[in-house]
Amino acid sequence: MAMTLEERKAQVRGYLGRTVRIEIDRPIGYAHHKEKYDLLYPINYGYIPDVLGGDGEALDVYLMGVDTPVTEFFGRIIGIVHRENDVEDKLIMAPDGICFTAEEITEAIDFQERYYRTFVEAWQPSV
Image (tube, rainbow, N blue to C red):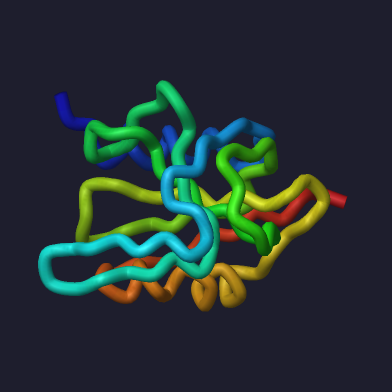
């Protein structure tokens, strides 16, 4: 059963600021062959195990601030990639204590998100 838009947004917003474990299935350097184009991943990309996203598959996460390929990571969710023309949103993770601006996130994920209408919501910890 598909999530409603409200359920989808509530789910991803509930992760902002939380520390979670992700598994990486597309590490830095991974070549993903799509139907109309190929993607080369400049950052690690994975998912939160056992959590389904809006597309009915694992909830996807971009990992920023880690410059080497990894297979899993514990980090803080620092942003959301809201997709306006898709059934899923994506999360942004970084090592604890590191934050990126919405502009920095947008630039880092453009390799894949250029194919969608998106906007980035960046989390800023309270001081």
